[in-house]
Amino acid sequence: MNYKETWQSVLTFLERDLSKGVIATFFGTAELAEIGEGRARILCPNRMALEQLRAHQSQLAEAFRTVCGEDHQFSFEIKPLVNTLPQDPGTLFHHAPPNGLADSYSFENFVVGISNQLAVGVARAVAEQPGALHNPFFVYSGVGLGKTHLLHAVGNSIKERIPDARIIYASAERFTTEFIRSIQSQQTAASFRRKFRSVDALLIDDVQFLASRTASQEEFFNTFNELYLAGKQIVIASDRHPAEIRDVQQRLVSRFAGGMITDIQEPDLEMRLQILRRKAADQQAQVSEEVLLSLAQKIEGSIRQLEGALHQLVAVARAQQAAPTEELLNAVVKTTMPVNPFITPSDIIGSVCRAYRITAEQLCSPKRSREVVLPRQVAAHLLHQISKASSNQIGELLGGKDHSTILHGLGKIEKQLATDEILKNQVESIRGEILGKNR
Ligand code: ADP
Ligand code: MG
Image 1 (spheres, rainbow, N blue to C red):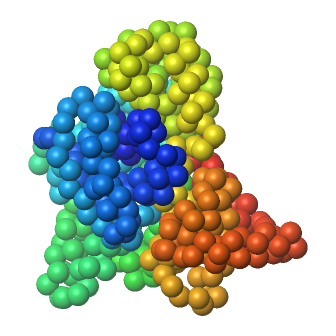
Image 2 (image 1 turned 90 degrees about the vertical axis):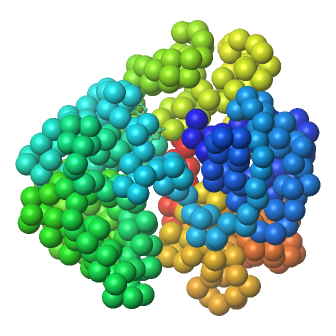
């Protein structure tokens, strides 16, 4: 179970003791940053949430005991605002070594089916002969379909055969943050360059996040060229085809097109079932074939969501010391569906910020300039519609705004949506992105 899923399961258990409102407002916006060796580190969006979590420590401890089967000591911290952007499971692993590779993602535990066989074939070839066959290798798909897993698998597989190989896995966001941090001094800038330009394989995830940050895009372009000319392998993942990435310079796009581009499609029923069998076995959970089939039928699209539902089912069954029956499955799916637990307020805020190219910090600031007021109203609107959050909760999520301010904003945006076609399209495309992750 990754951190996000562990946290979601914990939230489900908290519902026995706490009201949905309290959970959504304070716990839903917090994040499990690290867990292990009897400790859990939790990041809270603000001081108020932190105090609420502290105040409910005993319930939290109980929920963690149920989900993880052991006791934990908690530390609570206020998270830096950038962290409210959705993150890849890989980047959350505190234990990940500096090369960024998470060894739990391998080819061995990656299920191959019609929807991904081409991508896997290319990835395997790349891992066997880095730099030689398909360079760069560009893979794209919707969220939760295995891109990040595949990137790590390539890295791990190279590493296995050539232990000395220098490999870096980094999301484009990570690349950008490190780059910006590095330009503060010549020394750090030089060591950044050395680090990224001396690798044998560079695995860059979610390259669409390079958007509009020109200095870092330039740096990436130069890194790319240097590695490419030196015959080093480059693997890139993105949520869309290179030609459709806005703000990425044309010359970079044509570089991408010079190698191999493949996509991953959504898995069909047979493959979903196969994945569930595999994941149940990995968790040593005894789930009957009928229940797995029923789960595979209920949840289509994202493999992450499929995995999440299975985790939830197994966790609930273990907690109740019952078998994961069809009945329990229905209960789990039912309680988790109306307000989709796989879409957190942070997901919504992250998508809105990305669409309007502002930071979560700006969105939640007291500023009232045009650039932030509209995105804020859109965020409020989507939080209201998708998360069914109340105006009070939305106010809290958007940096402690008064609920009457939120109500006013909601009224305004709804009126605007009725007449402004362009705005309506914008909002629909953001909603599509958010829901697309969780279909
Ligand atoms: P993406 O990067 O495309 O959003 P991820 O690689 O993060 O997707 O995959 C989401 C989850 O689904 C991960 O836990 C991953 O291990 C799992 N997953 C995705 N595809 C497969 C597959 N073909 N076989 C097994 N697990 C998979
Ligand atoms: Mg990913």
